[in-house]
Image (cartoon, rainbow, N blue to C red):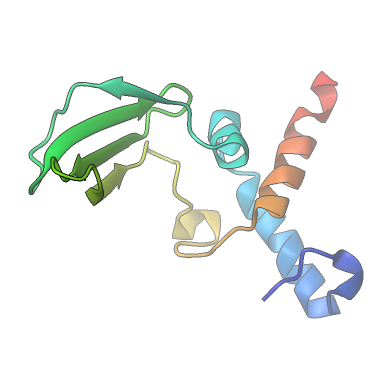
Length: 119
């Protein structure tokens, strides 16, 4: 596991972290923002069949990902949640990673590099 402190990383961990920054760099800026700031959810109409409970649906204003929740009508607990991510939001094998967990620090560095000319 890669530590957040580069001074404590082994050379192999530094190389892997640099690779993860490159992988994060392929994401569109709005997707990086969602990963850094969390999604900006707005309620929308439920447009899929959900298994049980009272359904709610949300769409992210930045990346268009969708979140579907079902809650227990007696207690209000979430009993089911499903995400449908926008095309290109998830990191794929072509990007160097399918299933790779890219730490937020790598996304932050990639975002900084992508926007440094804007500062």
